[in-house]
Amino acid sequence: MNRNRCWNSENAVKYFAIAFILAAGGCAHEGKSTAQSPQAASQVHSPYDHLLPQTLPSEANRVEAPAGYSIVSPPGWEVITGSPPSYIKDDITDCLVLQGQPADKWTPTSISLDHLGPGEYPFYKDKLHSTQSFPEGWKNWKHCEFQGQPALAEFLPGFGSHQSFMGSYQPWLTESLFFERDGNGFMLHFVMKNADRNKPYYTGPVPIIQKYFETFRFTPPKTNSQLAPSLSSPAH
Image 1 (cartoon, rainbow, N blue to C red):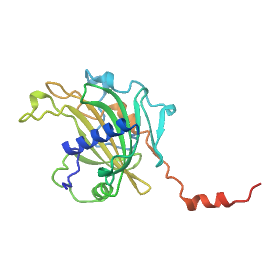
Image 2 (image 1 turned 135 degrees about the vertical axis):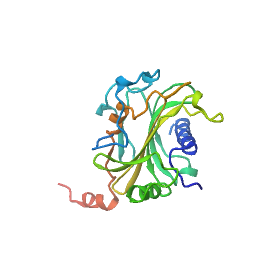
Image 3 (image 1 turned 90 degrees about the vertical axis):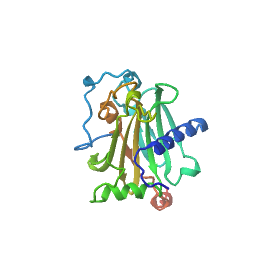
């Protein structure tokens, strides 16, 4: 398997596959610095801004996965929870997908929160704690802080059809953020359409999405041993 796991076409396909399978089966960025400063909304005039969250996060819209992690969903977005198919479960144990309106039939505006499995987590963890330069293929990844702890971030703005190379057209903005909590690895992704014929509209992280990233929380589920004392306590 190709171990270059930056957000490339293979991982984009994986992400959209997970979102589609979960939907069919029914089944934040608080820190001292980021890899790239968010772009002021007044600097951008995108025809796809109406697909972004239109309000700040509200705790009333917090959604939680059984594994103990949670995030606030934008109002009106579809919340998809569950486990990915078995053939990628080694990479992603479980996930939450928050899906807004699509710009077209191919490009949903989405935030996904992946709880990484034993195949994917060690790979990113090694890069997070390494003091070596990033290997080839990781040029867009940066060390940063998320909620006051070390993280890795990647931002790709996409490009328009006039900038395509040999028919390759990638109009999607993709933002990825890897971080650890209590021995667990997590990956936040944001995807939206960001280009048409010419240059991308957003050239830096989208401010309102950073606000939603900031709402990530994780409370590890209690183990049986932690529950045992309360279960065996005498009744009063």
